[in-house]
Length: 99
Image (cartoon, rainbow, N blue to C red):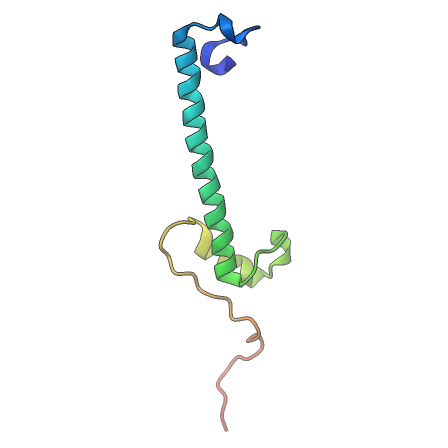
């Protein structure tokens, strides 16, 4: 309210109709921005789950390879990039098999 009208009134009845409208407009804009930020947060979490198969409680729970995949796939959550799924259980299986 202070950033919108320049002061905090002692009583809301002291506000003019114009001040009330400015405050109402500002609150509406803040609400839309909060909703957009929430959507980004949800998209980021879902991207991490889609990429590594789970949502870590802390990013330090991820291996360096998983962190790299998350960085590649989730830098801009909500975009239509297909995430590369981490191949869990395939570590150490490098090189051709055969005989």
